[in-house]
Image (cartoon, rainbow, N blue to C red; front, side):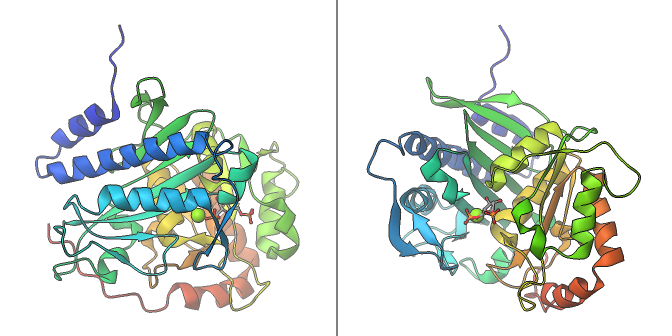
Length: 359
Ligand code: AHM
Ligand code: MG
């Protein structure tokens, strides 16, 4: 019989390689797996329960929240608020830092999460996902502060996502490769199904909301023509696949090879940064992409090197096979100077002063 590796066993065995790692970190990842199982259970019942439809609340972007978003958001919070492993949290659905209640102990990690990404797909039974990332606490204050949250992606201790698709999978990295686990709904365990995921050298797909082409900058348009084999050296066209759920689009491209892009544009000159959130979406997936041999850029440079200045900061995102992402940077450098001049000052505005991690 083949060796069966549950997510718990995998986390424990991986952590053994780091004598300095504490049980807190291991348990934190396992807590995320538990949250994922509960959200997956609720997601599969979404069409049955009266849970469908929009809640009255709007999130900080003025978007309507689906009820399942609220559920996922609260579930992740509740599973993590009392464990003593975290000093604070932040969620895409909350404007500010989420403190750990004073009655509970504070820990040495920070959790950032997008509880249910791609929520416009919930009502139409299309894959959605949860994205999370974990930083070490760096500030000297007893409880977590913004300084602990706003760290560059390069410093991530771990990141991952859960995809609620034809099966539920959790994919994570602690900086030691990317590993994927499939939920066996019968026994309620995540089992290792995709060890050490590497982006295939030969890419198959590109993913973008092509309906926005009218707003794209000249460089991005030319780049997509290059992906289609029309512009440049006449490469074989890549297939176009776009689900509109970042986790699902990223996951497919990670396994099959390809590039996902959500570029910035000059439609509103004061908002040249596109749609993706640096702290809740881009950083985590960029960490995974690099761990799998790929790359993520905002069109200028690595997402992981951007020094964040606000919790809900948005960035353009080009992510997937390294050569394809670098080609995007090249086109932008050549043809999008006007956009770069609008975007760079916003990107590079003074970040929070971030202390070095203690150990
Ligand atoms: P959300 O966080 O409100 O769910 O939005 C993020 C989603 C991503 O999952 C997806 O890649 C993107 O928005 C799709 O945007 P668009 O509909 O503009 O193509
Ligand atoms: Mg999101």
